Image (cartoon, rainbow, N blue to C red; front, side, top):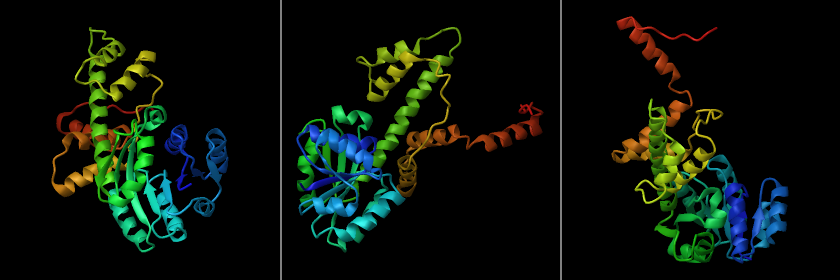
Length: 304
């Protein structure tokens, strides 16, 4: 056994399950050991309680795949893992880390003669059955070692995975992927809002979403998901209009500024998420008071 996964959340757990379905037996580790035990019982994988136990369970050269939140958790795990691995072992970061952090970590791990690979993973909760879209950066040698696992995790052995280039290219590609995702989601949301708000037409947006799924140029997985939840409830009255954002959207906007590449759709989609979080509330109050000041326009005040 040469392969282990650290982090068994929605993505990592299902990736472990998919590998089992494809005939691979691996070691698994999770912060909550009960989760690791549950997946091990379900799949036949080996549940480990510590990083050292996972490392000891794997034959060299090892592959340790991290499916952890970007930032401090991934950083701390790498700091603990690097020194206990052997030369030529390979760490794979499958979380949504910033590509510049990947480049820095690669240099540090090289001091321990440990290889590093960054993998952008798309597919969400559907990846277990349909497979994952995998974009990764690695040396040619590391890519060759990863190929059998990529072929199992992807929708098919010959598609859905790509060695993008040197270390860092995987997460850079995934960063841009998620920026595009922001723009696509925003465009669909605005379109449905426009149709839902048209007075007198009483448009059935669920029926329109379903229609567009068939031979339309805007058909997509995001549209499929929209059609499914709109078929259940078009009003969405119980949904708070708050949209979270992750690091990739911000990093994409910053990269565009650094390179001087115009990305208005992706960047404005990010700004709209900020707006949904109430971060423009104070600015809007300022605007309302300015209008009142120069034109005597009414200002709506909250009931106290």
